[in-house]
Image (tube, rainbow, N blue to C red; front, side, top):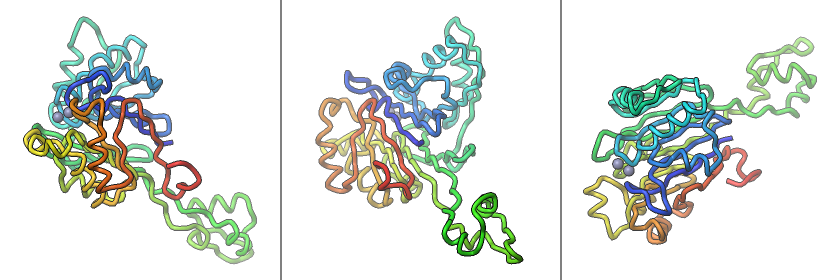
Length: 311
Ligand SMILES: [Zn+2]
Ligand SMILES: [Zn+2]
């Protein structure tokens, strides 16, 4: 399972329709939170994500709309009896931030916060996937993130194995694991019955940024790109000044990077109720685009399983 849950999709300010930035990824039951704007814990309650399985928070930058939800969230988790450490990653000063969090208010956290500063190019390796930090271009030090799953072993060609005289059973598993087997004096190699390795899934989250080469390169052939689309074309100058992207710019990048799907987020308060202008401008450039809304959930399906299931 690889599920993305948009908890906050607003840009800079909360509005009645949109919470500030927060995107959760549920990968096989492990919860990863990317940014944590004010009110994120209540959005987690509304989305019924639970908090126990939250292993890590990845911060793109230290603008208030991306971090103000963290103090409340960690306090609630402490009240709930959490004892497992929580990892917090981000660009520079994460240690200092974690120290302030731990000292804030008259409460004592029951769990450790493990703060990790990331530089663009750093990779956080996990079991079955890794998180890559990307350089982004915003008005303060910032990074984006790519979640890249490990390659999976190729498909096992059952018919071919039987043709070669391999009896169904433990020898099938051995071959699929990459070990050679011997059948009636003949060595059968795994490559005779196991296909090419299959790619895992890739999700890229830009955080707040101008369109940039680094996000483009990281997004090549991604299954899902979640990109800053704070503004529409009528606010192009303000996008340049505030170092955000327009919906059309995000769509151009998605097209060039050949991503399967684009979801636009960090929608400015001025389009909070009606993001139609953003969608219209993006759609002219890139067809498979959606404007995120709070509590939108979407599954990212393995490419070789598309067709069997909804994308
Ligand atoms: Zn922001
Ligand atoms: Zn920002």
